[in-house]
Length: 154
Image (cartoon, rainbow, N blue to C red; front, side, top):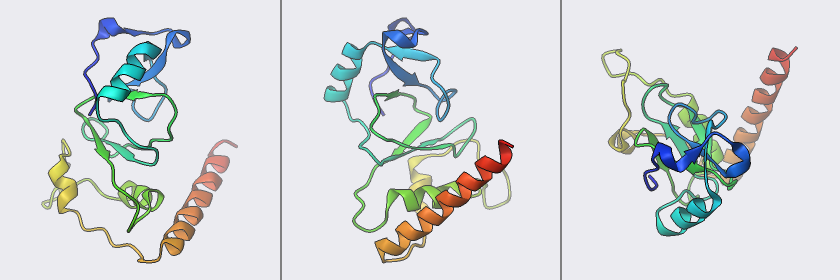
């Protein structure tokens, strides 16, 4: 996805840089940071997610999803799939809910141990043609998520 970062290039001190996410911390709190200088250099030299792109864990806890919000953060791991597309047909927020409800199993009922880009290319996801309808569905599901979070925090 992005340039490989070695452990020696990271620090556990959040005051010294930009959050660096590996598969173990992806979708959670970062436990390593890279320098702001390296972040800016790598972001300008190598492919990097656009705001709204979906990142998904492809091994370990398969299917953990993050929508890149543009905050300074560096994602590097061959176990993170980056789903970047232009929202001309389907909104990323809508796709996030579609992907979060998939059952990551093989056709014979076994559990998938790893996701590959080809797995996504074979997927057929149905969605309304009207983007306003997609937005309403995503808003409704987001509201339900917020209610669930509020209930579990009681």
